[in-house]
Image 1 (tube, helix red, strand yellow):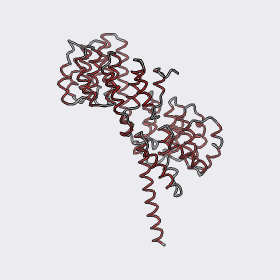
Image 2: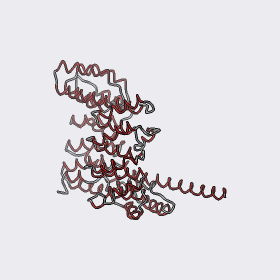
Image 3: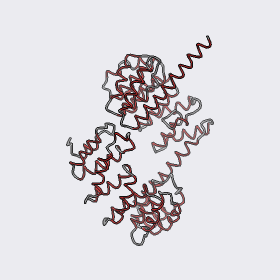
Length: 453
């Protein structure tokens, strides 16, 4: 693969810290397409909030964005402006305000859009000046959407007038912008207005946009309902099970995850007692879902509830086409905690396995009493991939024993000192805190034992 190609930029792992330096180098040596790809990659995967401050090359990253904001290429300039809020919100706002006088309408439109994300209260007057549908519908819609996004809900009353008079192209732009704000506003009352325009214009494109808009609203409403359902009565359970058949995978996932511990911060939604066999049968049926995150959640739920009667069912997913499902299958066996599962995975490493699969296997073996892989498992705390390091740190707590505490703490303290990724650093901090609590509890238990004697 050409190291100066867009494809090369896009395949660089977001979890290898050295890749940010590679991206900066590629920007300096690449053509316009590569430079645009680099800006997008840094914004999406290598933004400052993802890293510990003293490791992040703030100066170098800021410089390439400033260079692009001075570019003669409209494409590169708008991409830099679009991506800049993830890098520096204050710089993004200042740049957007300056570019409102740029000769290109496309650049001015992007500047108005960006102010919806990084603007301040005092920008309302400026944005309001651009709302003139008789003069420029595109800039008017950009300003209108930004004002709504900034919370100036008094402008919502303009919807009826805009929908009745704006062009089909402008209405499509409006719908695209409103889709991103379904959690902020109740748009149900303006849907009939859009549908009326479809009838008047007989527009297939507008109809498709409206259907997408309605879908976004329905999805938000369903997910909000799922959170509130009472699992303590059969009516709530049946309603939740009905969402297992929903067309949207995010709704299906939200529904099924209510029955398990889930991931942070959803743990507070876990059922207070195990579901019935009737419910577990419905959950297990979802192992055939086309979405791998849902299949993975099925296995996690069975592990959460320590379903030793489903060990063979879990084992069947160890060879799933999706790595996510495979690693959660092997991990669920450790969650179940039944040593009988070891006989099903004795030959696990005989097949080609990814690093993530290997460390999940090692962790499960340790939890099931097979200690021979401890040193090898712990060595992955210094792996070059941040996801691997986080996985090791995050699973320390479930393999800790009195004999391992000091070694684990030493390894974690060393890893913490050189960790550049925030999400890994936070995971290490969390487990170190738990290890301290673990030690304190053991000391208290020991003192209590001596006193009792």
